[in-house]
Length: 148
Image (tube, rainbow, N blue to C red; front, top):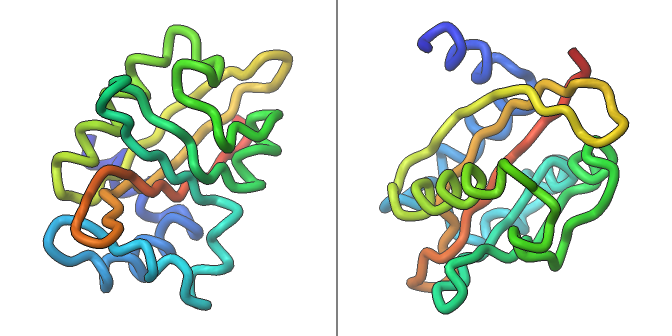
């Protein structure tokens, strides 16, 4: 487990993003306006922002970066998790985002997914709670894909 965590943290994009973001991670979240500063622009194509919808117990994807879209094969911006076609991974995505949103910590994770008609893709990500104003109802993820 520690070796896997070290490998995720060594990925060049994940490493650079997390080092920058950790400097702005205060009181269990990063503030949304920080992501709109020039230092973060180069990461936008790797970013996913998801907002929790408590009345529906679902998340809505507010941002699905172009690197994620090209790796996945489609843009899921504006879709709810239940509409995104995650199939048997839906509960994993939901639970993972909710635990990060409520946990107040920066989380590193990796895995392998096989998308429809695609090669197997290895993914690396760092995910953290995202605050707008005083509320934390979102997560921001920096995600990178590589063919295995």
